[in-house]
Structure formats: C-alpha cells, structure tokens
Length: 155
Image (cartoon, rainbow, N blue to C red; front, side, top):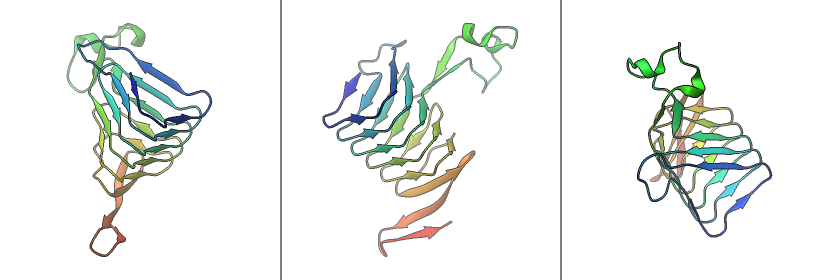
C-alpha cells in the first residue's frame, strides 16, 4: 500500500490491500487525497487514486468480485457459495482532481479520468472520461467541460 502525503480520512475508513498477483503496489493513493467517513476500498490487483481527489462518505471502490460473471465459468456456478468462488479482478484507476459524491460504487475495471465528477448514489460500471460529470445507476456522462469556453455542456 502506498499512501501519499497529505492524505486525510474520516472515521470508519476501510482499506483492504491483499495482493494475489505479483504486484508491487496493490493500493496507491496520491497526494492530498481526502476520504470521508465509512469509505471502503478493496484491492487485490490494483487500485490507483490520483492526487487531490475528494471522496465523499459511504463510497465503495473494488477491483474484484467473488467469481467471474462475464463469461461462462464453472467456478462461478451458483452451486458454489459466493465466499468460496475464486476471485476475479480488473484494475481500477481514478485520476487526479476527481470528486466522487456520496455513496458512489466503483466496480472492477473502471477508469475515471482527471477532473471528473461523479454524482451521489452513482454506480460506475464503465470508464468515465476526463473533465466530465457522470451520474446514475448505471452511471452515464451528463455534462462535459468545454475548455475553450470554460463552461459545462450538456450531452
């Protein structure tokens, strides 16, 4: 685990970093990141959070699942209890200056670009571009920042 200078956390923050592959840093949190209370981050492969990111309360970020449900896989059979299924994982990357709203859930394999904002209660199942606002369940981009006019444009 790598924790950057200036990290601030609220109470009941849970950081789980357990390498199951040969990875030098399973969980890397950048400089001046603020994590509010009751946040849970779970990493078995790679979760990277960029500098100056703000994470609101009750956010869940994970790079893994109990089983693989994307392709046919006998190990993810419903006959096997979830806790006994092999873990599957894909890296999660959260850019710099990102703002994750209250109760956001970020699923394995997601990349959130620099400067993105994610609305409260959103479930992030797909990549979110830099300098955009995403919201919903599943989340989709609803606004993009136009640097030439310095304004947010609706989609």
